[in-house]
Length: 244
Image 1 (cartoon, rainbow, N blue to C red):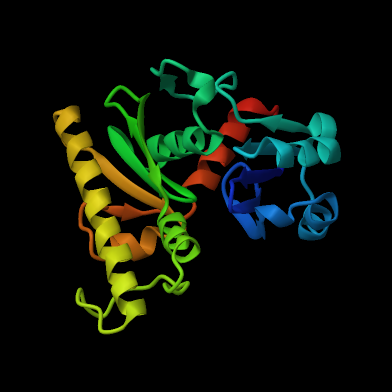
Image 2 (image 1 turned 180 degrees about the vertical axis):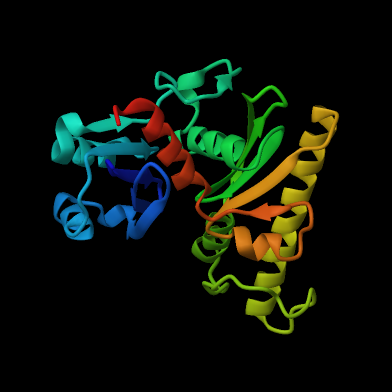
């Protein structure tokens, strides 16, 4: 059975997975700013694989993978056989992670569907009842919003994100935490509500990404949390595009 190295290369973190035709076998994470040839070699040195599929939104880092793996490597673009349709004015402007999410949710959860991916940005991607990628929404990520407050104010501290004890903060940190988490749930709920109203029917709503568990914990609109959705989408794309 042939094996694949799957790479989900995003602005903050890069996820690597070893997979075969049936499962994700092993996973590792490298901070994207630390991605280099030596770092990649260390991360995958015990893995044996036949093909490499890279889904990247960071072109400079993609080049490192190209140089390392050469002809064994393919990159996720609309030119690949994705198994889904695309109805979008600029298909090449869709992030590779968003394409992988669309593939993963269609195969794993069905459609119509909305994928909410909590990364550096939070993205909302819509797959129609015909299995066609329709577009979506991009908003600032939760971590970015919190970091912005810390970086742009003299007195507000940097905080770690977790569930607030109360909506009324008794310390500056608690007040920031309540604003971030409750406020972000409000943003997500409103965007999901507007999307569902335009779909004119029910849709599966699947959350993935760094803060999916935190935000979904008290937001019933996010029906399913699937932490491996993007990697699973990459695995399915690899199966369709490499000779196995």
